[in-house]
Image (cartoon, rainbow, N blue to C red; front, top):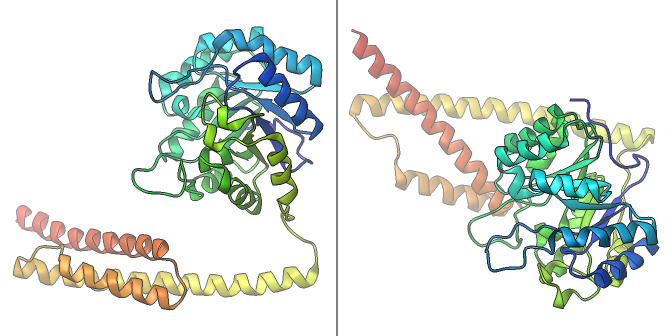
Length: 362
């Protein structure tokens, strides 16, 4: 897909900011004035708010669109809002909205994305696509493809984190590997980090914004409100314009690369060593799976079940202990060991199934 950038490619970070929801015209304009002075690239405000519970504030609706038009006239800022239906698209276009975004709940539903895409057919307007609530890269790409097929060429992706069942320090788990893979598949697409929705609270906004910049994201989308504690939606994750300015001042912007010969030689030497280690790891894993197949053969002969819970617990506990000794995080070691264990089970199951099919054919 030949996707064109929405924003100036020479500017980094791209800054998108504004309140979670447009509440009143005074609130919207007050925020926009402060943010215009800070040089943001795009002013955001939710007009229609898809919410989890029906008894919560779901946006002012069409009545808020003229407020965004006032922002454009008074500050010169371009404005964006979320569109979740074909009707939203038509009303936003009629009001002169500069950029639309597809929200996480919408991008998770192919029917909804298609409705928005159909409404945009033949319209030349930039669209930003938030990741779906569930951690499904294909679903995210599918939303992009539907918009592309409708004729939309200027797009950016917004990483806002993914739903996670259980305790986590984030409102929406970042799962950084998913947007990284998206960037690998679509290297020219601009990637924006919505640190507000990932964090869900103010105290970690800078940390997540910095990690996004360290991962070479193109920009940030942050929720800014003149009085966050009294916001009508998502109060805990919004900050004041003054706090937003402080966050930007504390960001460290690192270069994507360097042309320093000494640096490049040093990096290349270490990358070569990493490649050698990776090759050795793959050989070792292949040997481990071969041993697993031999064990599977023995279990087959003795009619022993594949899964041995006590043995798996021993492997896991020993691996976590070794990982701690070598400075490897428990999360990484757990994921690694579970993946290796599952692959071992798959190899043992293959041996058993192969023998059973052979016996059935005799």
